[in-house]
Length: 169
Image 1 (cartoon, rainbow, N blue to C red):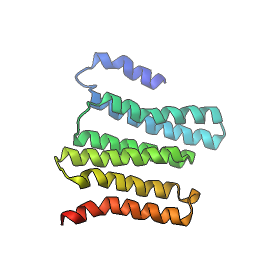
Image 2 (cartoon, rainbow, N blue to C red):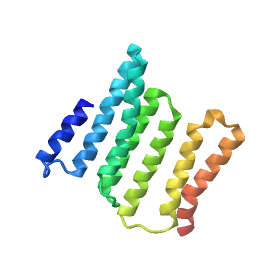
Image 3 (cartoon, rainbow, N blue to C red):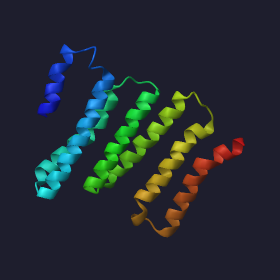
Image 4 (cartoon, rainbow, N blue to C red):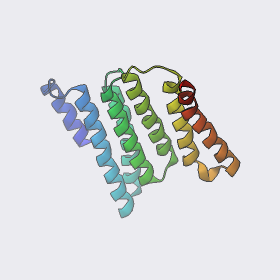
């Protein structure tokens, strides 16, 4: 919290350097540092620090999204990609599927944002991220589903992902 407070105290002094993009990058980098602290706290056996740093790290992509301008740009797609990587790291560190789902959501948001920044249109622009998300959910929750449900989710995700592009050919 001291690092975040120091950053916020310095921000008014350097408005031309500390732009919203720098705020977002700083929040995500701080989130990765917190993931490291979470891992160390878990190995040492300090559950209160592990829990608090993990939760605070999970808020960093939200803070980054609030700091960025709301536009479809490659820069915002890159920030969503880093947010996805942060949630994936949290998922691996804490073995929590919620963070895996958030990683899948932000990863697909990054893909969608990059596609929309390219000014591409068509049904596949919208269905491809949904198909990927369906496939990711099937993989994340594979142990909790029976084999028929896993097969259905794979077929549905594949159809959503590839069928619209195949129709255009």
